[in-house]
Every structure is written in structure tokens, then in C-alpha cells.
Length: 262
Image 1 (cartoon, rainbow, N blue to C red):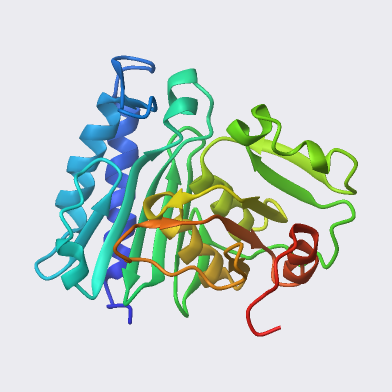
Image 2 (image 1 turned 90 degrees about the vertical axis):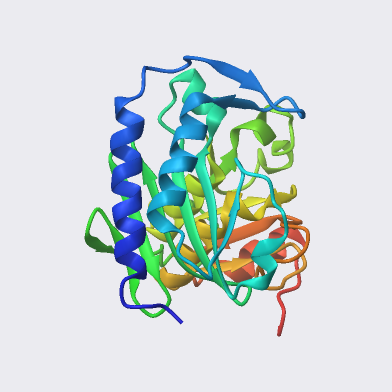
């Protein structure tokens, strides 16, 4: 259950993170490589420290891409699930498709979230039962009921690897975008009709975006057809699919997903 000041905490943290990000030297700056080859920059570490200081309170858990997961989060009902800089590749390349992603999970459910793109000046904020705002104004997902003419956002990496070739003759338009969190925020706010990835994603990649889609009244589910659950021992989903509320059935059919309860 959301506390009265949860969204205000997220909004304050995102505003401070955007200010910090804009004050950083232009990318790429100092870029290092993680064990798996993914890039990491000074901005990742600085934003992690700032967000932790702004958000975390006694009794709450913490899960972030930029800090070791010692399992202590599993003893907390409320857990902050954070990616200080989602879309580091795009950040390094100077593409405005990266964001700061903050999700609040309670008992495994993403109940609130905020995603801010410092490069574009967009801030998406939403919570369970409170709806969604974009830069302070109300926002809602697409009301489109069919894939004909729809705009579907795809992972740049997946498109580059050829994983979206099977949709080349589909009746919808595919647009590659970097950060998965940013894609989810755009779908939540109706800037696109759907997005999906059938590749595994860590909780910190998608928790905030899932919270936003849920808050807005959109549809979000995993390739198994079930709603996404967070704060499990292994913080990774097998993929994620999101759309406007009336498009879920057609998207699920296209991807061969049987929605839970259908």
C-alpha cells in the first residue's frame, strides 16, 4: 500500500538525479566495462549514491544494478528497485534514449514508479490507484484495439541482432529505442502502442516501467502470460510485454502467449 509521501519521494529523487546528470561532463567521459562487457560510467555510480540517499529508509530493501545484492532485501516488504542509468550504451553514444528508473515494490508487486529522461526533459510518475502523469499532467495509454497501424517499440540491441526480422511484414511500425525502462514509460503514457522483449530482463530494468503501465491502466505480462512479480531470490524475468489495455489480446496472440485467466 502506498504511503502518502511515496510519490513525492520518487519525484524529489528523480529531480535531483536529473540535475546531477545534466551537471556531469558530456558522455562518454570515463567508460569502463562490466564482467559481461556492458558499459558503466561515472554517472552510474554517482546517480546510485544520490538515489540511495534520497529514497532508502529504515526497514526498506534496496535492489539496484549498481550495487551488490546481499539478499537482505528479501527480509523487507517494501523494496526500492532502481536502475540509476538505464540505457548506458545510448548515454555513451549521445542518444537521448536513456533514463533514471525508480520502482517501489511491495510484497512482490510494483506499486509505484518514476522514470525520468534528463536528455528530453520527460518525467513519468505513477502509483497504484493514482494514475500516471507526464511532466505533471495526466497521461494515459493508447486506446488502440488492433495492431494494424500501431507503433511498437523494440530494443535497439534486439533489432541489431536480427530478432525482430520476423515482424518486417507485420501491419505495425517497429521503432528501435534504447532503454527498456524508457520504452515502458512511453507505452504507459500513450506515446507508443506496445513494446515487448522476449529476452530475460533484471528486475531493475523493468520494475518502474511495470508500475507506470499498471498505474496508467495498461496491460503488462510476461511471456508465460502471468503478471510480473518482483523481489524473488533471482531478480530476473523471462521477458516482458506491455501495451494499451485493448491491445493485449492481439499482442499475446501474435507472440504465442496465453494470458493467465483466459
